[in-house]
Length: 311
Length: 312
Picture (cartoon, chains in turn purple, red):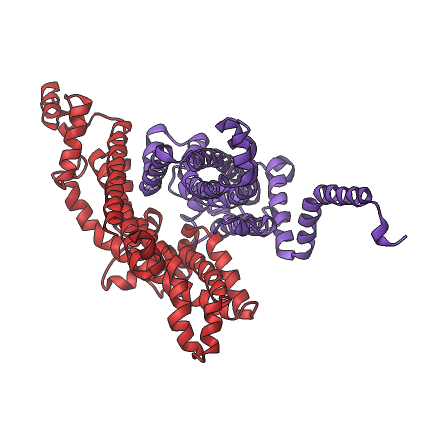
């Protein structure tokens, strides 16, 4: 029997098989494949996973108590001990172990980074999707609001707010989310503008679905790649903002260790104890670099540029 | 075109008005009694009440709001609580040259480093230079600016004594090299990546092939076609960065001890100097809005496609 004699139903079956096979393995295998091929991406994902594990299991990883002021952490004249067997990355000005503080600092920095970005993404996606989909005066109003917040010197505003409410981890998270959502709202809006002209949205509308249903079921699922990419990059940005706030003395309250606070404290002693500045700085660069590179990899993986998103 | 310009101008004023309102609200969030602050701690209750009346703080919120907007319309930012007998305007005016010099320096670094790196990388993709430039760009984007500033201070100013340690002096440019580099390095990294992508796209477009086929020399193609396209996205970013920097760059200013607008604002927050807070916040936002507007208008001159769109 030649190929042409095959009944049509056979073709149909095999077609369906291929399609379902593609659907189940496609994304996961593609992700895994590109990770195996791209060493830089692999390293970045590994570092991110490692950092998250370190943050979760900080008590397990940390060799010492991050808050305890060890007497042998200071020399006889009261200067912090340098790098050595006892204190792997040295001790700080109060005799606390720098490595343990870095490990516990990962908890603070990552928590702030991830929670703030999640909050910002939620606000940004809602405002961007609603204004893009509805258009008209709703869009004008929401986008002008975004412009105002964008034009406002957020950092100063945040400093004023924190000066009033007092520094706390919660405030830092809120402040970062308030600064970052505008960015996402604009990107999401421009995507929704083109999405809403697509056939499936028009079909959903003609079937009588309500606007919230369409946004939830048909618009937002298409935005997920964009949201994932920009959230990954957002975590990197948030870690940097948190560090800036801590540097100005209005970040996560003492004595909790955060990387920015360690740099801020370290700068007072860095002429005699440069590791107090180098250790948290290098840790931060590695963390932020990893999140940035992972964001780049995700961009390529989802091919968001083909969807009309410009970085 | 003129209709577009009118609409765009109206939009700008709407945003400025929104920012003013936000600043007005901000003044109410900050705690403390302004009348008490002006009168001083030893003033009698009558004196405080007098001052409250003078400042118009006993009037309704709506009246205060209209007065506030009216005052701003006349360019009057009020009198500082903390700095005796000084208007907010004059304090900002004194800080502005430092911030402006720093801002221009920062943008210069961004342009001088970002654009050539981006263009050369795009002309030689995957070359050693391209790898080096991509790598440094990633570092530039991932390094906390204040940490970089401190490192530069430690090595170049403290250890090697090439640059002054901090503050400002004569000649100013000498004191601004490290701060402006700290300020510009992140942007430079970002610019180089954007320029690289844009140039790569341009080099693959048909009009470049056409120019090559008709025998145009490569240097002329670069000057006439490539750079022009590569600069378009950059113009927006330069405008926004300049607007942002002019509003005061608190962290850079505080590391290097530059008495600019950022430091002024930070100090005013710690002393709860409400008029100064609203003043600096307003000046910063107006710079941002104004630069956005200028960029938008500039586009009509740079890009004929945009001009055509706006004419219709």
